[in-house]
Image (cartoon, rainbow, N blue to C red; front, side):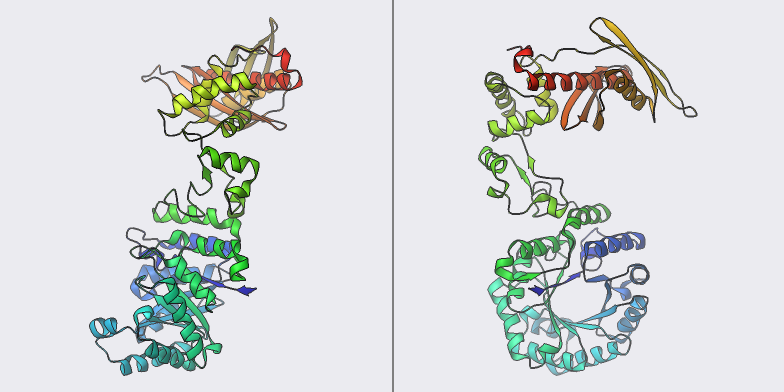
Length: 514
C-alpha cells in the first residue's frame, strides 16, 4: 500500500480565510493538535508577511516535535532568508518556495518571460538549499500553465535540489480527469521526477478540491496539501478529513493510506473551528454535526438493523460519540421505540401506538423532537410512574468556606427515611443523600436547568440523566427553589429506574394508565 504524505497548511493557507487570523499561542495550540493527529508536515505560516507570522512559525518550529515544520517564501532573497530563520529551530525544517508559471500570471503579475521565470526558479531553490536541505518548490497556477514549460520548470528545480515539487490548482480551475492527466504528464515527461516527491495543492472554487487531489493520487501524487475543515482562500482548500477518510474507506480503489490518527479528526476540527471562528456547516462530510445523523424512518430502521446499510464510516473512528438518530416527522416507530428504551421506557404495543401518534402530531409542529418532549408524551397519560419514593423534606448547609451538607427525607410506604451527606456542592450532597437512602449506586450523566417562568420567583425545571448498572433513565423536577427542583428530578429518575426494573422482571405487576 502506497503511503500518502499529509502536508497540512491550515496555519498558512487556512489562516488566509477572511476573519480567521490566529495569534501565536493559537497557532501553537493547533500545531500541537496537528502533531497528535499525525500529519507529516505543518506549514506554519508565511514568515515574511508580518512580525507576528514570523514569531508564530518560529515558536511552532521550536515547540512541536515529530513533524516537519515548513514556512512559505516567494522566490525573493529576503523571503527565503526570513523563512530560513523562522523554521531554524525545527528538527526537520522545510522551506517552501513558490513562483507563478502560467501565462496570465507571468504577463500581468510578474511581467516576466518564460526564460526569466525558469532562471529565477532555479536560483531560488539553489539559494534555499544553502539554508535548508529540504526545499519544496511550487509553480503557482500550475493547472493553467503550458504543460511543456511546466515540465521544464519542474525538471530544472529538481536538478537544482528541490526534494518536493508541488503542483497547485491555485484557483480551483481544473477538472478531476484533467488534473489527473496533468500529474501523469509530469510523471511521464520529467526525466528526473523519481528524485522528488510529487505534491498537489488543490483549491475548492468549483467544489473539486478533494476530487482533484484523489485523482492526483491515482496518477502518482505522493503528497497532498490540505487543511482542516477545508478552510482557506476564497472557497477554501481540499479538506484533510475528507481525503484521509476517502483513502481509508476505499482502500480497494486507491491502495493508499496515511499516518493520520483518525480518532483525532473530530477533535481537531472542533479546535480549528473554535480558534478561527469559522463555523463548520452541519452537513460537512466527516466532521459536520449531521454527518452521522439520520431522520428518515427508512434509514433509521436500516441503521438499527445493520449500521452499514446507511453508514460507510463508523462515527467512533473519526472521534464522534456515535450515530445520531434524530427524531422528526420523517422518523419511524423503530427509532422512536429505541429512543424511549434509552429513556427508560419499555412500552407494550398499545402504549407504543398511542405514544407514536402523539409524537407524530408534535413532529408536524416542531423540526426536531427532544428527550424532554418524549418524556412529556409518555408521562402525560401513557405510563403512570409509581412514586416509590417521594421527597418529604430537605435542608441544606452551604457556603463558600464550608463543605456543603444536605439532609434529605424520603417517604416510602408511609415511612420517612432520612440521611445526611456532604458533597462538592449542595446538589451533589443531595444526590449522595438520596443514594444513601435508596441503596442504589447511580452515576449522574447529565444535568440541565432552565427557567419555565420569568421574574425573581421564576419556576425552574431540572432535567437529569442517571445510570445504574446498564440502565439509563431521565428525571424531571420543578420548583422555585433550584435545589428542591434538582432533588425532585433525581427522585423522579430513581422512581423510573425502579419501575423499569420491576416491569422488566414482571410486566403484569406494573400498573399502566392507558
